[in-house]
Image (tube, rainbow, N blue to C red; front, side, top):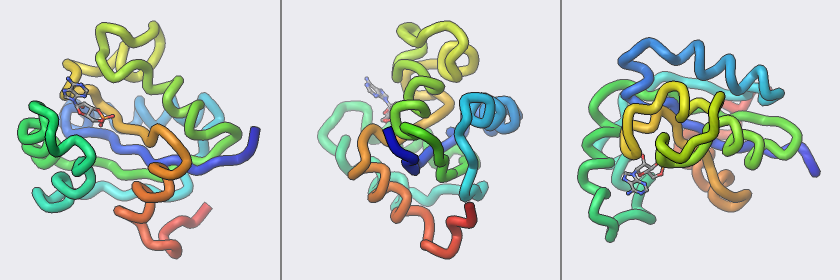
Length: 140
Ligand code: CMP
């Protein structure tokens, strides 16, 4: 195992319900460090570009609308085995399948409004971090 960085989004369903702090606590309690963080209103172009990999999926349009429906918090998390650790803390994409104690089990409203996004592999983590952050915004 190694120290890894991963990309995270706290989604509009969670920022609307004032759950940002509770979700960040879950990351920190698991040993992940927030090395970059900003609260932004995602543009339609950003949402469409970020989720371009899902362009052909039936949920793509709704997903892009949802991601621009309110503020999000984009973050870079760092820790031992950080990509897998973050996925463990988030729980399964569909909250109905998420393990007890995970962010999605506790907070998600639906498979779309599932409170958080996290990178699934080192390559996607690097791409997703670059999509929202410049190197000098990663402050450690
Ligand atoms: P996320 O990890 O951000 O990656 C893609 C997102 O698409 C996913 O979380 C969900 O919010 C959303 N989504 C909506 N419907 C589905 C679906 N049927 N399967 C997978 N993801 C979905």
